[in-house]
Length: 52
Image (cartoon, rainbow, N blue to C red):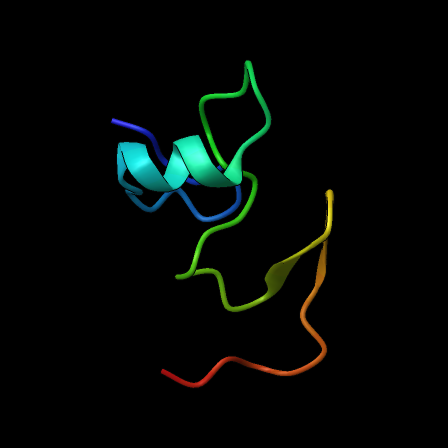
């Protein structure tokens, strides 16, 4: 099962397939991460907290 490199939460195989580069099995950040977000090909600190 894939998990987020940042927070360790479970992510679906479909999420990992869509949001990770080829050859990488664990996404660098996921929707449950409150402190980081994807920014193009990079990951950066969130400017504000996410509200769910």
